[in-house]
Length: 224
Image 1 (tube, one colour):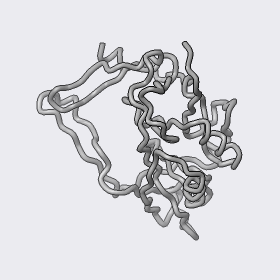
Image 2 (image 1 turned 135 degrees about the horizontal axis):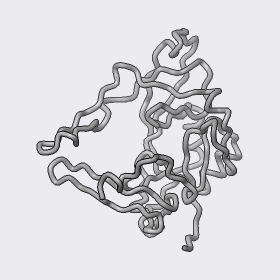
Image 3 (image 1 turned 90 degrees about the vertical axis):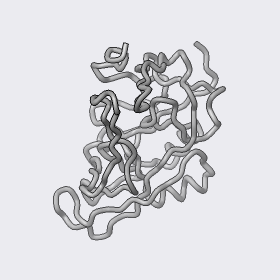
């Protein structure tokens, strides 16, 4: 199995993990995670044939969040794995000329989760990845295992050897995702080096091919 480039997963740091490339486990407790405000709503998808296929669709409108405290890092993560960045980080990314992303404004509630009033709410942006990595390389073990012809539900198998990017399918963006795993933000070596050099806080970088499937249940166990 030979692949010429190394790509990285950009994610929330967790206090029970170690990050040999970049990331500080204590950031998880230090910064916490933001919650969605009650006003945030989602589309509902209902299958006309299979009731169990009912699920949330796209979010309606921009994100509204409740911060865990007044202290935030360069990155802010929500419990639903949304990636938020500060105004400073957005400007840095734009100056660096990174590709494959756009941003949406984020509204912030005036009080934290503990009920404390925010003296000066920060300016945050939701990082929306637009770059495309196409289907992952077959060596990942990721494959389409189920498609519902009635509501469009699709299920992909778990990764067995991390997420290995097929460079022939990748569009060359600095930020991108692969088919079936839209919540896993993949970045290039260029982005990785930039984040490390700048010492950006509250994020972790893991070589994508070293990702480990942590759930006890694998999709292929449900959709053989």
